[in-house]
Image (cartoon, rainbow over all chains, first blue to last red):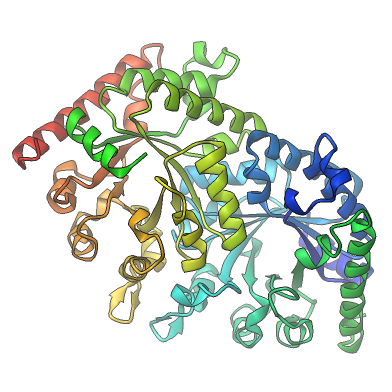
Length: 275
Length: 275
């Protein structure tokens, strides 16, 4: 998908919501569990009930991978459904892969071709030759981990490296990489202050922002500090939407939760004169 | 597998060789390509011809993942064969996963349980809560990326953080983590000098050392600087062994290449009085 199509969708749906598909079979309602492919059926129901309010979906690959080849077959089915039924939706493989050259190209092909995602999250530790292979695919994007919202982010990401924090160094270095116009960045919503500094480094890049809701980030603060001149953020919610209820009514409750977030986003976009 | 069993195997086989299974279907001989599951058949032939000389195998997950659910089914078959036929062998999922809490646990379960590996390579960027979930499985190990052998390792890994290099900071920090007795480390063979500094930080930990051969690392230098009091290193070779020939005789040539490396390792172990 071209980035312009994503931007257009954001304005049309008045939403910058990304729904995280962290499908935990232990939290899936009994009648879904009894089906032949519960990972797929649950994802499909969530997609159907929330697609009017979301511009992106982010399957968490670990939750499929943990079930082996069958889990990956479910992922493929989910992606087939998404791309077929909702071709306007931006898709993110939350895979956090990171390896060099040849191997990185295999991961890129797995997610960009075999599973047909628009983008994949990527880890920076191995440097340039572990990220550039993801940046040579037309209309495909790599979303680089910069500053995450977990406690462990202070172990290395916020350590000082030559007068700046490691995550700033990661961002600044990555700008120079071949194909960097296809780079987006993961920035945790619990770090709203850091968003301002990040926007100075990359005023126009798209940011994928997890951590709103369950993890304690504030949507208003995120918008205040993270919005670019053409919105430029995707705010992810996973558990708050897909497990809004773990009962038979899960899809309806997921819809409500997504609509509520979309409505807050619509207000923000109106207040800031984007729409 | 208990680490003691690995140590015993090293002395018994007089080898600290790990064979990397980066199975590229484009390099596989025609008669294998014509089979129903060439990824499995090629891996099996390599394992059969080299198992007398190797103590560990390291499937590169990207090379299976790129073929979708079918590729992962091949991986499962390879692991079933390895664990069944060669239970003494230490197995490494070269996956370089890295995500937090709940998600990390899913990756750990995928590779430790579903695919039944003894260990998995893990990326450190997200810190403590992205690695500790891998360290709570009995007789299973996480192999943390420290200093890699690619060009991009200078982007971040060798940057100075508070008077030491980032990879040293990673190692030093990781020692404090819960379950760190189940940590091993990836250190590229092209960085033999750094090995000495690393051994000061972690005198007893196992190191997984890729980069000997094709990537230019020297086995002698690696041994000189990396060996611990009970050997404590696994030196990986992938292409140099599995593509020693891309003809029908590939298994025989792989055997020769593995035997040659094993014989060099035997000399080193004898010279250093380990055996």
